[in-house]
Image (cartoon, rainbow, N blue to C red):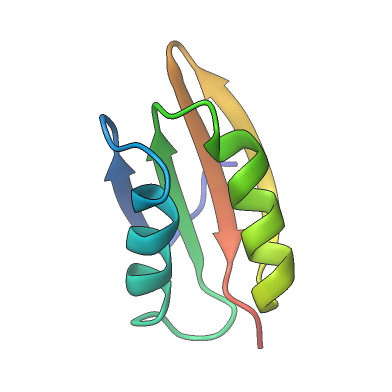
Amino acid sequence: MKEYNDELDCSGMNCPLPILKTKMKIDTMKDGEVLRVISTDPGACNDMPAWASRVGHVLVESCEEGDKFVFYIRKGE
């Protein structure tokens, strides 16, 4: 996915920091906007989709870029 409204780099952070930082950032965004989150924590691969689903956001896409995990999360409406 190439289009997103903001980006958050959580590289080097371990659970639960990537989720906490993502929540803080997405709370400042408008409904429907997309946040690109970068993480190096393998646990984020399970945590990020579960968190997004639980709080009403949509994980639009996730992928690996080298040693990083990238998530595109659309803020729920």
